[in-house]
Image (cartoon, rainbow, N blue to C red; front, side, top):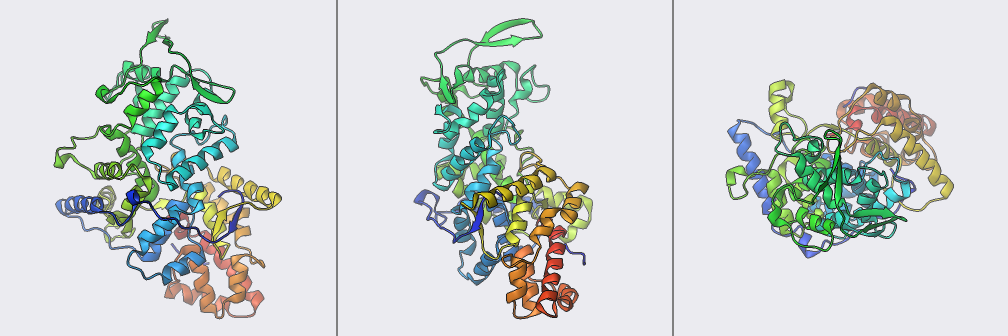
Length: 526
């Protein structure tokens, strides 16, 4: 050995690619990218920071696939990417991955954790899956995020037919204090604000008051969930049980700030939705820009994602940050999240290396990371880990599809067991956890062993069988697992192990796969 740095029913199919509509075309003016890069360059110059060099192209491809489809690229994709010499290669591959069925499955599930409790036991698996599918397809089809958010906040109907209502139904199904929970989730998910800190009393640090939280909760006072249907009742008083005062009191629906953006609607939730998505409500688009930035780079631009500072004055150029620029571009392009992803991918921070001479000094490292002058190192989440191992064990690209029900169930069991044992850290934009149990599970877990077995159909077995030389065999192993070519030192270590008959080579490939699966380079995004 040497020291070096998922869902049910996947099968190998050809990629499908869609063309972005005009409002999300990557050929549109990308002035937002220039503005972001100029803003960061100005900060780097002011602080005398020298940013990291540009990352290797294959390293950027790995980042892109991990962010958008939740796994490292397949060996087939790596070879296709290497052979693609077009000047707009990264943009076209971003479009291709957004159109992929894996994007709808993975990215929507991670983003959906902001709207639906990822660990709720009340929500049945098929209900969660239906919501994920709706969210993913909405993003892929270019539905504006304003429409998506409005459907979640104000949607009505049977949530099997209208999965957007899962946002409301999942809280109503829990019973008491549903309106308060919906107010809290609405402010956190859509506005990036912890207004629920004022649920019991005025916030001691922020400007939120208890009356503001109660007024927001009152907007959900007329909604009910019966017979699997979300519907609004006739207007009725919203009653708060004040335990401290030992009395009940009625509360009127009232917006916590900028009430001028509200408009009249028949139902209170429609009025609330129109206020949340209003073009002048800068918190709304800044919040989603921050979340998507976090999903793409492994760390949100501002942490935590649900406690953002108040936005500055948009008319003051000195009071504008990266989130303001992304939010402005988003609204200028129909709130299309595909466009937002493209802009983030083209910014300089996404393409920087994760290595820098200054990272050895703690003070310098903190400055580099805080100013986005180096790509952040982040540990793969449990979904990314298991999907990347499964993908590395196949030559072709794995995508969600129908399979033999028995085989699909067994695969689902293995994935679920791995994820449960590995642990879910919560919002993926903020998740950071590296533990001894993680290491033990990778070293001795059944999944690591099974995915590194050389069988007739596995990548390990096929690489060992079809590689013409030991050097080609080692290169295939590294490309499948780490999306890079082996170094001279690594070749010197492993090539002698690959010389010999097919049986010897197969065992050596198994050992190489196991080694790479347990390397820090495989387990972290960089």
